[in-house]
Length: 91
Image (cartoon, rainbow, N blue to C red):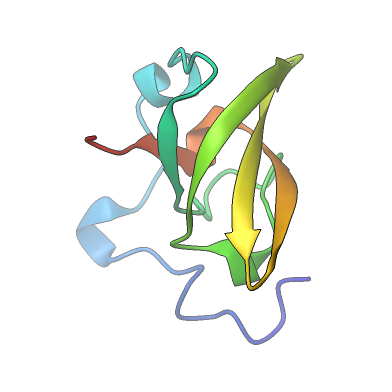
């Protein structure tokens, strides 16, 4: 799944290491707009690299992860991702 994604899944030298804990425990209520930015230092709960940079809406929370609905062409898809890979978007 990580093949041909070297540039997407590489951090800049000053950004290397684990993310702050606040990103892992962020609360995203349903209806929140989020952007999917994969954090390569956290392997668990990563969405597929083709969805990197996409913007979607949080539908629900499943355990620790969130279900994000994304428009892909003419259809909508549901992506399950952990909060480390999601960032809130200003509305």
